[in-house]
Image 1 (cartoon, rainbow over the protein chains, first blue to last red):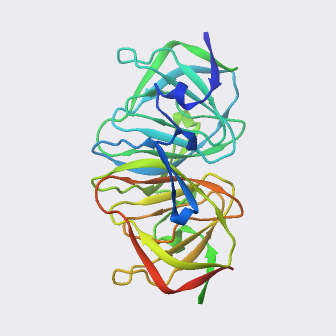
Image 2: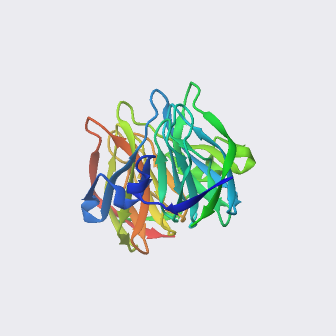
Image 3: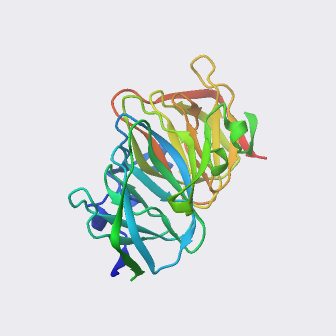
Length: 162
Length: 162
């Protein structure tokens, strides 16, 4: 299997695939609540078309790298955001679209506290928690219509940490 | 000032005011991602009417109880959810509507890890972080129209921990 290496997650590198949910990635910053709160405004949009957005919690079993990336998925009708609620890193594996299937996967190592949001149609691997069972807040779409596509790689990729 | 006491936050007690964002409060639970992830589905809805939902981060300065509750606010056009990203408790102060103004405030002490979602029009006090500067993921509404009402109490209330 071809090997891919996870790089540290940052908003600029990740932008072709979505948004990093962290205060540094806000569209604007302002003081509210009489100066007691700083609002880092819109670190990511939520896009659900004719559906509705819901908040859920995903609890992921941990994976131990190296691990095989054998498939990817995407949600054509809505965005999907993951925000870690446990103080642990996790892996984000994404790909640009290549004619209706994912191109070569690109892997990022997210630090505790960094979330990600995939726009509608963005190829990504399902959740890859690390170290221990980890909880994530998930913001995604509920509604009518087929909102998942999956693609299986013929050979897969071996994902290693840097 | 009349004194109010914060009680521990739990989903059943809080339901007249909104939803608690925690895995125990999910509408349904299912295994996904080949059994590696548990999805606690819809712990809270996101309601934004004709607006759009966005993800922001609020960074709150800490308050030291006892503290004075002098005003409350509400957002008639959209829900607003707060999920703590820092491992610290915080205070949630809400009120039922009493003819277009807030009734007597009710206070809850949220544990680290417990989020809350206010439905459109629910009276609540602005963010009250405790112990140290704390970050929260916020899911709320962006869009046209007046989406904030504020009410100042004549005498205010003194909020103490239990």
